[in-house]
Length: 490
Ligand SMILES: Cc1cc2nc3c(=O)[nH]c(=O)nc-3n(C[C@H](O)[C@H](O)[C@H](O)COP(=O)(O)OP(=O)(O)OC[C@H]3O[C@@H](n4cnc5c(N)ncnc54)[C@H](O)[C@@H]3O)c2cc1C
Image 1 (cartoon, helix red, strand yellow):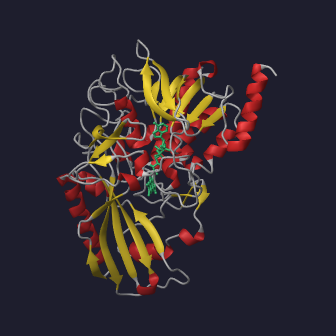
Image 2: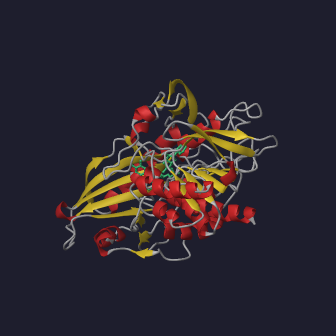
């Protein structure tokens, strides 16, 4: 048997025993360098990998998570990757992400509204004058359309307050999700709702990872945790250092590298990769990596009981969202908000909650812990996040809106929200996108400033976070990055 036949034979046997797809040489070494190596197999990485491999780009997707997918997927065991949260809040990291094949899409709810144009606009009071978005809603609109197809989004009619769209949703709304009664109920008082855009097949481990395996130029390597990025003189990335399931260290080379490790692990990896040329970590010459961690806040607004009964034959529950107050909030200098309605016809109860935007604060950040290490002995990430008066002001105004809805619908207020919030588990903003390296980490093409071939995918590059869930936008950015990388490869 020749060496190459032996390798091919080993490959086939291993693949059939383990389900792993190994690269042609069995290990991702120099001789078999990929065009693009993507780190992290959540939606950002898996969708990017599929889009590149579909075009024949030799793509290597790495997943470092130790968690196997099971029917009852649970977040990573804290011992595998301990993370501390510092005062003033304990951020519940252990319940907020999934480290394993398909990433956090194993846990998410699949809600996929778009951001609003104002979220990208310099007139948005939450955009800092020295660090605007380098792209607009119009730039991202065609990619939103493609992202909605990738994530199989179903949705219904929009209204004048909805984020604008040129085409309809790829999938129609199923009858059981149409908020017909809710609409009738709120329309009369001048309040406009729409169905929540929702992913029909949300887990990329069941959609995109199997699809990647069907492309000859796509390779998925599980249980391969990248521990450091190694630079070459002159700004290029030379290779990645990684550890496999056997804990052996390996080097991985490619022409281009993309970090798609989520909004906490991506800055952690950049910060951990200190070299003589990058003593504070890669992309961190101006101390920007990890800063401006942002989340979405979920808050109860009010529970109302309608005085007049609604006829809703056969319906036990209806839900919908409203963007009606987005403009009003922004004109007042506040954060964006999307209202969520849940109506139960049996006792005429209307529950109103809201997702609120957080404002950029440099002190909310991810740093390397000086106390905790992971199973490999590397410093864990430490997250500091504090709510400011900006979020409190937005909340107060949203609650006034709740009262206005109660009056307009002639409802009895059963309970008003008490200002308690919960996190939405969206990790954003830690590698901000921008034109100026002094105030951002990646450029408008998502390339890390000061490097030639290192990119970031995911929600870490978000400049502001609006009130729309992040996965649709980060998918759109991944598809835009695929176009950019394909262009660079020509
Ligand atoms: C309970 C819950 C509900 C949610 N609901 C919604 C929702 O309704 N709508 C919405 O838009 N979003 C929702 N989200 C957020 C959504 O899941 C994330 O926005 C999305 O998964 C982010 O995708 P990603 O690919 O950037 O990161 P992730 O999905 O987190 O994937 C990152 C991957 O990178 C891997 N990785 C990390 N570091 C390394 C390394 N060093 N080497 C190799 N691999 C590495 C990780 O193991 C992980 O698999 C929810 C999240 C949670 C927890």
